[in-house]
Amino acid sequence: MRTTLEARVVIVGAGPVGLTLAGELGLRGVDVVVLESRDEPSTESRASTLHARTMELLALRGLLDEFGELPHEPLGHFGGIPLDLNLPSPYAGQWKVPQTRTTAILRTWAVDLGAVVLDGHSLVNVTTTPSGIEARVDSRHGSRNLHASYLVGCDGETSTTARLMNTEFAGRSSDRLLHRVDVTGIDIRNRKFERLPSGLAIAARREDVTRVMVHEFGSNPADGRSDSTFDDIARIWKRVTGEDIRSAKPQWVNSFGNASQQATQYRAGRFFLAGDAAHRQMPVGGQALNLGMQDAFNLGWKLAMAMCGTGDEDLLDSYHDERHAVGARVLAGIEAQASLLLGGPEIEPLRSIFTALLETESVQMQLAATISGLDIDYRRERSSGQSTLCGSRVHPDVVASDPRAADDLRRGCGAVIDSRPDCSPRRWQIVRPDGYEECAGTGSSPHSTFEEWHQFTQFDREPQRLETS
Ligand SMILES: Cc1cc2nc3c(=O)[nH]c(=O)nc-3n(C[C@H](O)[C@H](O)[C@H](O)COP(=O)(O)OP(=O)(O)OC[C@H]3O[C@@H](n4cnc5c(N)ncnc54)[C@H](O)[C@@H]3O)c2cc1C
Figure 1: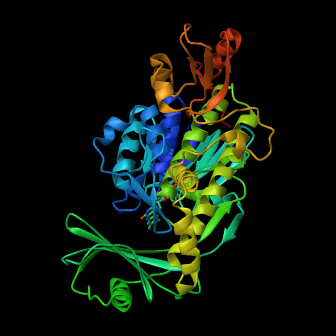
Figure 2: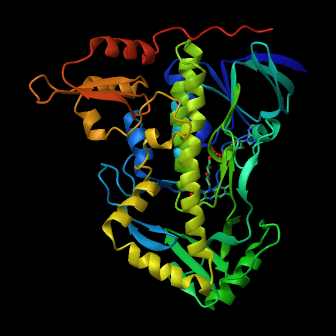
Figure 3: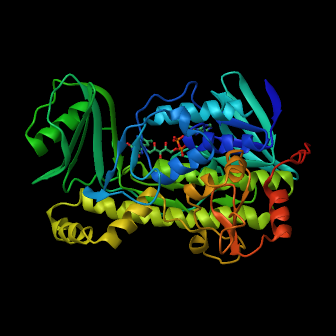
């Protein structure tokens, strides 16, 4: 059976990144179909950390209430060296939430805003047409064609979209593995990044489940991948720590490498990549998840404006310019952390120097800002310098000071923040829908700019109809 479906944007992958993007587009009335290979949402306990900037963005959209009270950790680490994440943000630090919960909340949000999520549907091929793209989608019911204007691959580290786009990845493959197993039924002491003579050992107990992670120094699997079993990991744990955990009951076994690869282009015409589909990195401290969700916050409003006819090619290109540069910086930081974490005794001199440097406030603040995503300034990130957008982060307190602007941003629109007429000097700021500054000034309000910007970002126009062949 072959039937034809239609949407304005197709998102491949209902992981946290695809669902964030679906919600962002749904907010602006763009009709979206999300394809998801799995029949049901994943139950794997992957990333468990939301960082400050992601929390700020979720707050901007009024989504934080859905998460309820979250466990908070003010301290993070850089390559296992303790790092204070206390920065000027209402959400400084790490917020602990299982990825399954984040994904479930985002899915409800996106679906409530009109996104159609097709579970059990896989993208298998895609072609361009004069008016857009045509995707071939397989499910157990057969094959379907899906016409759309744009397709965004949020399909994770083994992205089919990236393969179909012939995307080149720059970087290096994995040559070291960190093994992980979640177990029940044992009582071992917690270990926080413990460096022992022959390896690195981590153990953290939450309720009944202990997460055990281990790396044996100098073990370099040829292909950087592993299909290690619980028995293999228990043997490595014994060699590194001397402890016997073989009596434990494994819940989830998983090993990951230190690969660091980034798509050289996040956009090719009507195709985009976001999240792990665009960058593959070692999952240290939840940075991959946060980086990916912020890709989606950056792309959503730009794509919606393109659909409404107010966004142009430069605006769409600015997604690559801005997010590729941020990704490159974050990946470099993760690589540095992987070396500090997984390096053997030869890395100790570097670790001592790093530990000393981290006592300097400016170094600590800089690394904390990068990990938290608070150092993003799109004026700096854009490599080409051709884009006209501004881009420093607008502090949440500034947004909160203007209820009308806060409401505009919650609805996914751009906003104008104008200080009270009695403030001296009077200051105005135009804020992009993703909470970064478009432009700012002092003096009396430039009404024409405000009007233009409001018209540009309010999404009160019908998105352009897709012509189908
Ligand atoms: C095994 C594993 C363990 C991890 N552990 C941690 C951790 O401990 N800490 C941490 O910070 N980060 C961890 N990560 C990283 C973190 O989970 C990812 O950064 C995050 O999930 C990225 O989100 P995403 O939406 O880009 O991709 P994903 O979450 O991978 O979602 C992609 C989705 O696309 C779907 N899909 C794939 N191909 C197709 C197709 N052809 N058609 C339709 N759908 C498709 C997949 O089924 C999947 O649901 C881990 C990742 C993995 C894979």
